[in-house]
Length: 139
Image 1 (tube, rainbow, N blue to C red):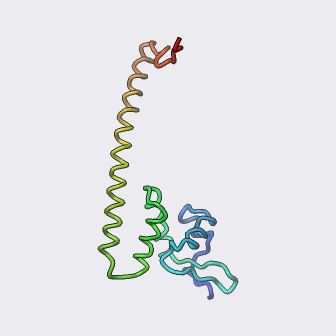
Image 2: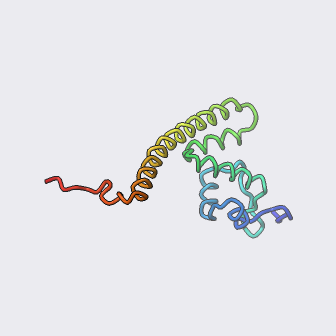
Image 3: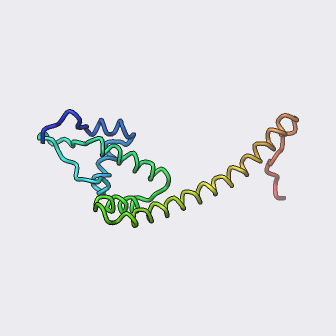
């Protein structure tokens, strides 16, 4: 396959997505691309902008906590083409629900942390911070 003007090298894709070359090869081995990645006559992988766009979505899904197994399932559904949109939607809704729960948990954690920040700020300003939550011997 001859490299066209719009074709991208693995380095180009790594730069565009923030994924390492190693990660891109892993994605390919795991079947996470929507198509087989063709090779040039010299054996180099030849990507298209659509591959970059897909990888950027994959990055967001992974960063939001989607397991590789679920990402593989989603990729397989998309690769299969029309007719399974309801399954894709269900998968994405489930993931959205999980992400919202994670955000809720993080907001609860943040509330506790913020209350400690406020307490420490108060003690530091008042000069009473020495000994705040200092461990005491159990004897």
